[in-house]
Length: 352
Ligand SMILES: Cc1cc2nc3c(=O)[nH]c(=O)nc-3n(C[C@H](O)[C@H](O)[C@H](O)COP(=O)(O)O)c2cc1C
Image 1: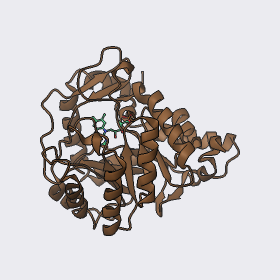
Image 2: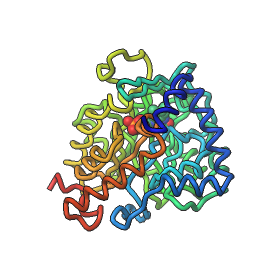
Image 3: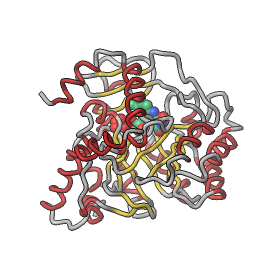
Image 4: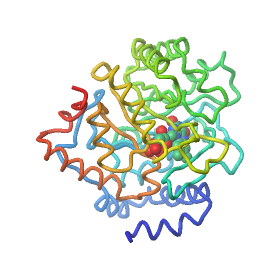
């Protein structure tokens, strides 16, 4: 049994949100101890020229990013960088702080290597989070800021709420993501319509030249999803991140009645949505794939399907700190086996 599996067996006896909070405290503390960071980075980071890429004007030393939701408050950036991620997405952050939904709201499914969460954008709010990021920005890795709407804001006021939260991060962050796809804020997913998305990206592009992405749900009708993404791209979106968690509970054997599912139970659905997206928009915009990726085979598959970058959340929880290193070293082998000189050449080859 690997060292992480033994540790995991102990950690998994603890209530999921409590263990996340405890780990956050540990990782936050590690962020100020350089020598430990150096040791971690030596053990868990992997770099090779073949994995490097420039995307949307940003330099990525590998294509594996941390998905939104793990570091909602930007408290763990330094420590998380030591685990080999090529980029980190902070948030979802809302304009004002929120407690999120009542607990328990985070559930683990060990056999199915899946998570169900109904967190509801619990976060410290944009003032606090931006002040934390400003202390370390610009940073060694690309940092994305994932932005959301406060729960108490009506649909009519949603645009202004997104504008307000974006404005608090204009001086920091390398890219932004509009999250309209969390299932845990009532009616948020209703904003995934062409009219709102049009206004949203026109607004964003009036404030910033940095890359702005739309993160979509895996539960939309394909035609609707394509229309919404088309509009976002027309109005200046630099790319699409697919997907958030699913509310298709048929993917788990004993699901809870709240929240969205991630991990293995999301993999097939997320991959299928990504394929549709890629057929429509590959080479027209930048595509980032997320959902059920926890090994090199799946990550490489999404890259060959058209993903310039991939992201991971649930796989990191189940497989631990060596995951990025394992994936990156294996992708390097796949690239060499397939005769590619750079990861750039593998992106989208299965579509051509
Ligand atoms: C506990 C938890 C919290 C999450 N919070 C957010 C969030 O705040 N914003 C967001 O865009 N996605 C959030 N996500 C979704 C992830 O970013 C990702 O899209 C999804 O989990 C699929 O990837 P995975 O299968 O690798 O976990 C969350 C996921 C989990 C498991």
